[in-house]
Image (cartoon, rainbow, N blue to C red; front, side, top):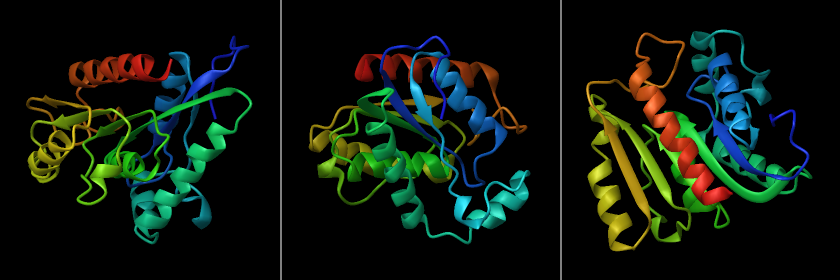
Length: 207
């Protein structure tokens, strides 16, 4: 849980969802960055039932494979509910997630009617329940990420047919994971642009 030191009033909330390797330092840092922008944030660790993030991403990836992704989705929905009832939160809450967390972000938009904004980074798309989405979506995609991008046209078509608010950005010549500062795929210009758009979107929809 993170919030600005100087915060005396209630703040809007953001659930920050890690990739497929648990709550590593990169995601902890991302949650703190979001808090510094004027939010109260929570970054849960889906590996907690297995002992928590093991200290390196390779082991974390192996551990996360042992968990059911729909059970993990329920864990992040529980984090939303925790934040909603937190004394430091206004109750207006968004979600941002990366890779696996991008899928979680899309699915929380489907499953949580009160969600106020969702920002999936290179996340897999839902195929059912799209009609239940209430939150505006800001979707961030890596230009070279053919596997994940293949699901976007159908998702976009359904969102638009149903009148769901959505904006998608494709960042050219970058790979899946381009926001992750701890891997060789990190691309600073794309990551910083995507992050500034994310914070602006949350300020617009949560504050």
